[in-house]
Image 1 (cartoon, helix red, strand yellow):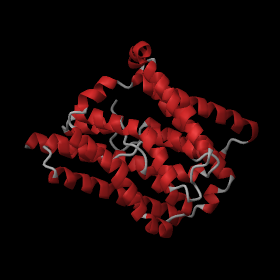
Image 2 (tube, helix red, strand yellow):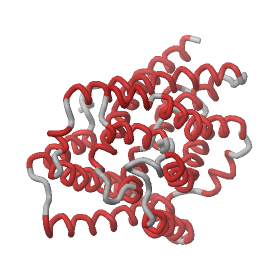
Image 3 (cartoon, rainbow, N blue to C red):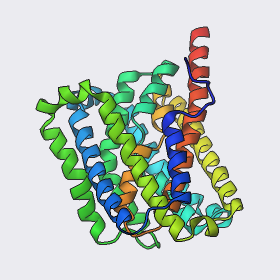
Image 4 (tube, rainbow, N blue to C red):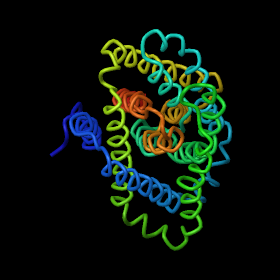
Length: 322
């Protein structure tokens, strides 16, 4: 039986349940220590499997359309951070310092892969280019996001500490490289077991969200987070998404891209990856108030899915009429 259009999917319900469980029954003491180790292991396995899944041939084949890929990367790692910085005065007024930090962090993340490609496909865009652009964004994000966090946030209260670099290497980069090296032997198995990868992917995120919000609740997150700040966060995330959708649309027209490439730029250049962002935050902001840092990303993630789902359907209908 098909799911009603506006009913949240199971993963969204899982995220909400994780936040609710952490709010009512936060993990503490030895349980929190064991869950912390389990979370670190899950993140390493997640990046290992992504390394084993990624096809280098797909990246090489798509690199011929370099103008489109550069535009997607520029929107993801230049335009987004600039807007995040420009919106900081508004954020400081409407939200809390931790939420403002979280918004700037989400602006430094790579684009999504699965949802970007899915929306491009539904809307009638250039799917091979979308695969290459989204993949390149995620590959670049493994290096660029930590560098941008260290550069832009190092002076702030949530900046990277000395152990973050080693955490990135051991928890993210080395497992990913190991997966790439073992891809000739494991790639086929991973491709045949996509539900396993999805389970590890979503399970790692749910673990991080639960442990992060548990620590935040124990430290008084909901007591120190006023309702107007949440409203300000929603307004800011909506404005950020609207600006990116508008800018990527205008940029595609200015550069003379055809309809299919404009659709690819629109969807790949306006997304931020929850799957990459939450595990990375666990490493980059170890010891920091993680709950408030990942909350903007979770909210933006839901906004981009709902808005782009409607937009993709409208573009598909317009393409059939044209």
